[in-house]
Length: 415
Image (tube, rainbow, N blue to C red; front, side):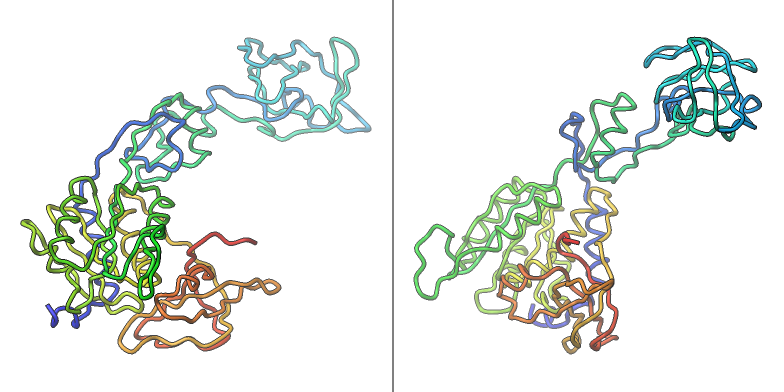
């Protein structure tokens, strides 16, 4: 066990392993109503059942015209046309234009046959009930939305793996889709281990530490769109940890064990995982800072991740690896958002390890500045202040002050 741990694998290999495990996991789907579908992940492709729009319609309030009737129209020399009809919203229009005729059409209204352009009402003057003067020419198709301009029948308009936005809800509604097939929300359980760990409502004695990882990890899980079924505090005891893991596996897709993943005398996570039938340890040790003692295991096909106990290490490791697994089992190809910023100080990789350095972003004129944040891995204030992180590969080794770097965001920015 000790030799395996210190033979830490590269980050790239760890990402490949976690992605393969996710691709092999079969995630169930469910049908939800449209009003409950926001932020859920679509499980199947959706194709247009009809053209959108279903008829030629106007994008402005104005008059439908034939181009030859208005091609020389101007303020000095307007064209005068006969108004044969005024369209109301929702009306099925049966009229067809011939030269010298026009029809008034409101925004979104159906166009008469032979409509070649729409003149905005601002460039017209009604002369009487049956005629109007046109003071501006239009191009063919100007201010017209044609049948199928938005979607053609049979065209895929939502693909599997897409997170549903408010705009997607409108698109589903336009197609008459009231129920959507989505992936079931992944369910997590979180086990925090340590003899020194106590609940947030317990009276704290000297030497004890309040349990915070389950709250921070649970928040990240819910932001991603997952559910947290249970959180448990367990002492550093093999049998207690095993029983807690057994209970969590019965109701979860993924179990996170915070603490106990290193190689100390009371670090039982690996041994506990291996004590189950149909268990497998895929990774124990990643060449990364923070997060070297991370474990990827499986029990009956369910992912069990041993995270470092230190909060900053646990949350960075979650964001890199568990988030990748979470997105992949739902076939969601969302990428981590990053922006470029100028470093205000030099940063260095830990020897032999890919290093993830927390930074705080600050706006300076037209540039973002990345201010390195330093602190020990147990400091929650480090992550509370951090806007994101930069990645320093083993090969790169360092970034000097003034370098433009990619900052991978941990939270939304206030512009």
